[in-house]
Every structure is written in structure tokens, then in C-alpha cells.
Length: 276
Image (cartoon, one colour):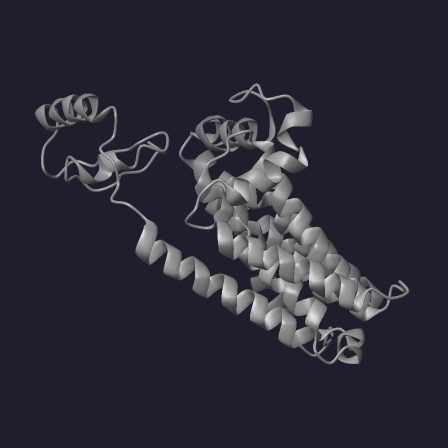
């Protein structure tokens, strides 16, 4: 429930937090927009115009401050070209992956992303089953009241999270780190709905599904996972490390434009910054 008595600092800070999501990881943008849109809708319903205004101001503030900073340094193009547009094209175009649209968003690819690794397969399967059981147990006549708006938000939030991780066209397993929070939130919303109380055993079923899948995944990971295999390009890596060490001092920093983060560890140099 929106409380008009909440200080403007809360809404300003919340807006700043949402505005900073893009700079934590560019793929956060769809999720941040969904959070902002649903929150703005609630504020409009309550006619909390001042709170809405502070939320919008806070949302734009980080980008404005960053642009002013780079403009004062005479490096505004460095921000837009080296950061913003680079990550925009990486995350939301086919510039770095030529995978056709129908393959990017196919249900098979969405499922394989969660189940391609044995280390996460069982727990994600449990979460998905819990969501299905929750929907079947709480599905009622749809009226856009507060409970259903919250459910719509949770479902939309999960949907755009899948969109964000599938759009780039790169099936990296670490992208699944986006999914636990929206899945857990959706399960919580389903179990908090009034209709969930009409089926007394529903919550117990869902709790047991989540618990057993997590325990099963933990047991599997502890007993079945094998030591990491030697990288097939390890010899090339060692050559790169020798070149880095030969051309740097112990006080230098290394910047890696990509996902080969092992080169932060191999040369023993601290991480630098992409911006000059």
C-alpha cells in the first residue's frame, strides 16, 4: 500500500536505486522498467503525484550526473560509445550473436538454459514445479484488484527476466543467476493470495517441492560433481600471462573486455577500469 506520509527522500532514493540498475548490469533494464511502471501505477491510483515526481527525478538522476561528469572531462562520447551503446547492442541486438529471433525465444531454449547444467537442474525444476502447483491451486476469476495486480507484476517480472537473458543470444550459465529472485517472488505471491487458503495442503506441497529439490540438488553437487577439467586452451592462457607480466609492473592494473576473468587471477594484478 502506498503511504503518502512517507518522506520524499524514500521515493527519491528508490528512484536513484532503480536508475542505477543499468550501471550494475545492462540486462537489468527490462526488470527495472517493470518495477518502475508498476510502482508508478500504484502511485497514480493513490494520486500520490509528489511521490511519483520524486521517483521519476531519482530514476533519471544517476544518468544525468554521469553525463555531467563525463561532459566536464570532455569525454561524453566515451560514456555513450564505450559503455552505453556497446552494452545496448550486446544485450538487445544481433550484433554479437546471429541467432534468429525464433530460436532466441523458443521455449526449448528457455528450458535448456535452466537445465543445461547438472549443478542447477534439480533446484530449477523444483522452482518451476512449485510455480505450476501454485497457479493451479490459486487460479480464480481475474479481477484487477490489489492481489491480482501483485500477481501480474510477479509474472511480468519473471517474463521480462527471461527476455533479458534470452535476448542476447548467448546461453551462458551464469545468466541463470537472474532467475532465483523472480521465481521465488512469484511463488511467494501465489502462496499469499487469499485463494491459496482454500486449499489447505497447497502451501505444504509447494514448501516440500522446494525443500526436496534444494536438498536433492545439494546432495547431487556434493557427491557427483567432478573436479574442473584443465582448460583446453590453458597453454595459450599461459602465453598470454607471460606477455602481461613482461609488459606490466606490480602496481599496474589490468582491464579485461570480455568474460575471461581468469586473467585477473593468473597475473596477480588488481582490476582496473574500462573508462580512461
